[in-house]
Image (cartoon, rainbow, N blue to C red; front, side, top):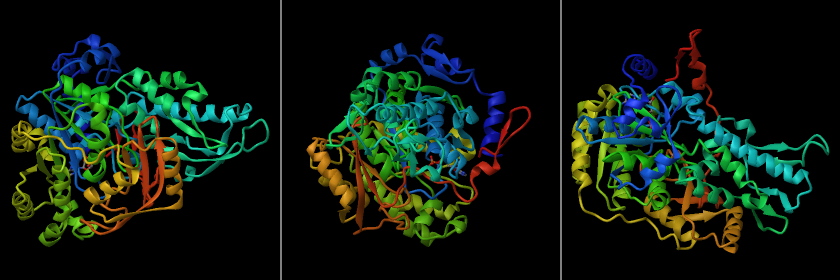
Length: 557
Ligand code: ADP
């Protein structure tokens, strides 16, 4: 059965009313704002109350560098949550919201797969509770207000060529990457170049994900720099006097969404920045709430540990105020073989040499995560094509590094497929050890970037384009150097070259530009050719999708 068929069968017969799921973690109907029977947002008073509660243990799920199909991080996170609850551990999951870009494009949704999924799967992957639409509207409202300011006399002296606030759309639409707007004469706006990003890359998504309440959300929104004046002074949302309007549009989007896994594990799905072009973690509020409601909160960070997990550690945890108690790295035999040089089309054929060669990618991610000072376990997300010899070889290679690895078939069996991993994880959570951040945020910007490149990516040096050097000057002049770094980099390689698989070393990273994001509170460092508005592939997943006359969806993975 396909993912959607499994999910739909569950939704028809087994899915519980969300009020019942909420009950299992001590929430009453008063705590919930219902969106139909199976989805709810948590109310502001409830969130405030939960923020005061002692947090449970925090588990970060991350992965090796993925193949283009994804390696099953969400699937493992969900299955592991179910496994922990089969062991009566009171686990609550926090995940990112899917973006329609990958849903229509190639990778698929973000609701897991097989017998480790969250439901209602179609709703979550499509419009869910409207958070993405609210964000898109809020970003574009701000853009409209900026252009109206130019039209109405430009009292703030904004230089139209230096506006950095882009419009967004939650769809991969390459033809909107570079546009010219405001043509059509004096009544149709001031002509200028404008770009569109995908919604999940926008600073407002990061702002939403890093705000713990409305007060913080407003403070962050007011700090957003939307561009510069003719005399190069930054212009903020506060200068435009529209903080309240933008925050108002996000009033409901700020509240985390509660759903359930196929096995009824409570799951908060909220906020969904990509990890290659943004900071890659679900909202701080969702993780904080999962920590308050569960004895164990499981959360994931996007793409490989070089991207999502590094940003989780160095950007999200200082805001969350809680560091992970353990890290689980998801690896697959097929992705390691891909990293070891086996072509994408041949990944289902046994190849112990390619596996051995590609293991260096997992080894590097293990070392990187161990650097942060907490226990690291490996979850081998089992595929039907994996051979016993391959699984044994991988478990042994991890054991040789002193790391426990478990073949886990959560896709085929749900939580039952990950019980040994769950037991080992519970034991690991109590291991002593201090969390150590990667870098001191007060160091100069170039030092922080070099630390990430050398320590996490394995590179030797960094070169900066002229545009990046100019950005560094602006950052220094405005005193923004103390902010953490959010690298924008390909997810396929530890380097900035998507074709350099395995564990490349000695390379030089190319920094094209550095964008200060004062609302989010980080500096986005653009490397290689990574794009903030992706394109669709030759045969988009959209071509497989349909909806019946009765409103039943098919082909959504
Ligand atoms: P990630 O979180 O790493 O991006 P996902 O968990 O979203 O990956 O999974 C990506 C796709 O791979 C999903 O369509 C899922 O059904 C599929 N998948 C995941 N694990 C397995 C597995 N063990 N066997 C087969 N398909 C899988």
